[in-house]
Structure formats: structure tokens, C-alpha cells
Amino acid sequence: MPYTYDHPHPAVTVDVVVFAISDGRLAVVLIRRAQWPHAGKWAIPGGFVGIDESLKRAAWRELREETGLKAGHLEQLGAFGRPDRDPRERVITVVYISLAAVDRLRLEAGSDAADAKLFFVDELPELAFDHARILGHAVERLRDRLDTQGVVQRLMPQSFTLTELQRACESISGAPTDKRNFRKKLRALDAVEPTGEVRRDGPHRPAQLYRAKR
Amino acid sequence: MPYTYDHPHPAVTVDVVVFAISDGRLAVVLIRRAQWPHAGKWAIPGGFVGIDESLKRAAWRELREETGLKAGHLEQLGAFGRPDRDPRERVITVVYISLAAVDRLRLEAGSDAADAKLFFVDELPELAFDHARILGHAVERLRDRLDTQGVVQRLMPQSFTLTELQRACESISGAPTDKRNFRKKLRALDAVEPTGEVRRDGPHRPAQLYRAKR
DNA sequence: GATGCTTTGTGTACATATAACACTGTTCTT
DNA sequence: AAGAACAGTGTTATATGTACACAAAGCATC
Image (cartoon, rainbow over all chains, first blue to last red; front, side):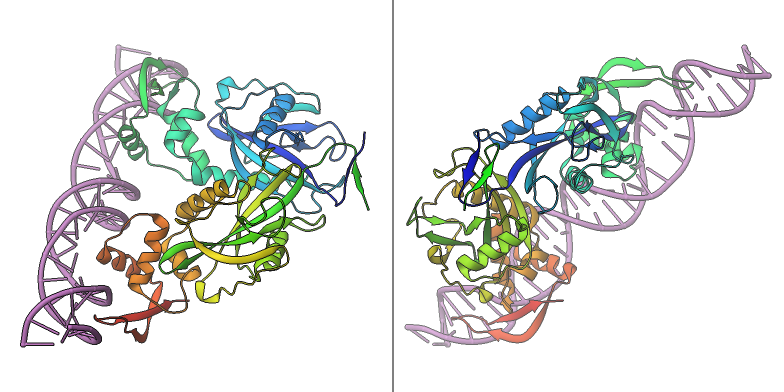
């Protein structure tokens, strides 16, 4: 069943960069490609847009198919379309960013993916296509756009210590923060509340657990 | 000369939102469409991406072809691709934003355009396709991203008064500003210098003219 | 059970940035 | 000569951000 046009059309794909905080560090979901091109290399999950499907819906579907994840909010990063980025044909990809709390992340490799797993953003493997460049832009966007409020509500697990939250924010911003100033700002934001539980975790004073305030 | 694929491909276009300051107000370049669909309606200049052409290059070329303008810096706004946005076929458009100083704007309607002119952003005509929505996003992006420095260097004519500059900034931010605070910030930015000339312009004290400092 | 290691938890002083605010100067018009 | 219209100019108060140090609690070890 061939599809014919009177001028050449590029293919259009969507890719979804899913960020999470693992072990206090910024991480991203990648899949291992099962097929040519770049078989065996790691890549951002994504795939072709259906002809009657919105871009965002395609992003949601592809993420689900390749990783088992159901994305919450999807924010568009932009379109990447250098003519030589895919050896099969001209492919323009529209990239979305999603955030996931790591305690809700159940990765399952899907049809086109040999495997799906989390990588720390500062320890990436070699990536397929121009995905390293895309990820760079995605991290930059995350840094620009994500504030403490957003980290609390969209990246942290159900309960966490304030130090864990601070590590998460630092891992995104890339800069260390003063503990007292960080907590002062948290009080001003009114974004967290103590759960009453504590975490005992080594030879030191236990930390109060908090949850995001709704 | 037909082009055939084994799965359906959307068409990909680029559109370029050119902002300028006219009469102290934020304005945008639109073309009047010569052909179906939406013939006679005003639209953001743009057109199809060549199969071996980068997105940015296509944007530059289309802007030139339809308005005679040579864009300086082009910033990508994003991709818009609702399935029903064009009655001809599925079309995904990648939108760029460009800024132009109004004294360098020489609009010439090109091949596919019956006319090209500047419209105030708050007095837009009815627009083709989903261009009203796109323009809304473009204005929002402009508000988020453009600071006083950027206005001075990329939107103001060669010489201008400080009041004109302030009007321009207000017209982008949407909020009125205090004159003395505005000028204090300008001093801190070190972004303008007096030309030595003044503008006499009505029954009042003449205003010193300034230019952007390089 | 005392000592020491490790991480939690807390407040103040200073610097910087932002916001509010009013009058005089110059030109043109009448 | 008087008045209308816009140009130009500093100070004060408030809010925000930054720098900085020590006691508290638990666990491990001797």
C-alpha cells in the first residue's frame, strides 16, 4: 500500500525525554535499539507520528509502547531536523520532555526496544542519531524552566528528606546550594509538609520525612 | 514526478513570526494569502521545507521569498501539528521567531503572497489556519525571553529616545514601568549611549537621542 | 557507657535588587 | 506672558538573595 505525493515529504517522528531523579542524581530513560540503524545503541524513546494523530498523542503512545510508561504532562522541547540525522530518509523529530517520580517508574522494554533503563545524565552511553545533542538541549531546558516547586511536585517520590530534595535540585541546577537558605526558601514556598515519619539511615541523626503539599 | 513511501508522511512547513516595534507598539509581519486554502486571509509567512534543507535554512528562505526580508537570528518556537490544521493534507509546521528593527524593514510581497505588511499585535486581522494560536504562543515566548538588552539591540531603530525604548519594552511586557526605575536599570545595563542629537517633536522639551552600545 | 563520627536541623547580618514616589527644565502654542 | 506637554533626574523603603557556624541525635567502636 504505497502513499504517493507530488513533492517529497520528510518522515516525522516524536521522541520523549523522560527525566527522573535516581539516587539524588538527574537521570533519563533510554531504550536500546533493536533494529537498524544504530542497532544496539541507546536512544531516546520515540517513533513515527500517525497520520491522523496529534504530536503530543503520538509522543504519549510511543513512550508507552517502548517503555511501558504513561507520561503525565508532556512539554514540547522543539523540532530537530538536520537533513542527515537519519540514514533511512529525511526525518524530522519533535521532542517532548516528561518528568517522572522514580518510585512510579516501572520500565518494560517494548516492541522496538531491546531494553529500557535509566541512565544518569552525567554518565551517558554512546547515543544513536543526534540524541546526545537533543538530550543536551533537554537538560538545558529543564534547568531554565524547573524550579523547586516543580521538582517537589513532579520528580520526588511520595516521601523524601529535605536533604534528598536539595540534592535533586542541585543535580538539576548544577550548582551547590546552602542548606539553610534552601530550607528558608522552602518555608516561603510552602510546598512541603512533614509526614511525621523519620528515616533512620546510618550512624547519624535520623531525618524527618516530608511530602509534597497539595 | 511522484514520490512514494510505504507509510503515509505528513508535509512539513516552516513559518516565521517576525516581530518589530512600530509606533512604540509590538507588531508582526503578515502576508495576505494568494491561494486556496484561506485565500485572501492574512497569515504568518512560511512554506514547505525542502527535502535536503535544514529547518532553519528553510525558514530563512521562505521568509525571504514571501516578504523580501533577510532574517538575522532565528529562534525556534516549536512545532504545531494538530491533524486538522490544514485542509489540503496533514501538515506539521515548525515555527521560528525573528526580530527586526523597523527602520530596516522593507517589505515586498513575494510569489505566493498577495501582500505583506506589519500589523499591531493587539489589532490583528482574522488569520489563516491556526496562526492566531501560533502567534499567541510566539508573543508569550517573546515576553518570557526578551529583556531590555535584547529590545535595544534587536528591535530599536538606529537612534531612538529613551521614552520610545520604554514604550517598546512596555508593549512587549504588557505592563507599565516607572520612568526613573527604567532609566536607572538602563544605566546599570550600560546598553545605550547618547548620539548627541535631539529630537524636537511637538510643543515640549526635545528628547536626547540614543543608540545601542556595541 | 564514654568517645567520636556522621548527618540533621536551625537564625542572623549583610548585600543586592526591586518598587514607590514628585518636581523642575525646555520648547512650542496661543 | 501663560500654559500645555513631555524630558529629565534621586532618595527611601521593601523584598530578596547570600554568606556563614554550631548544637542535636543516632550509631559504631572501644
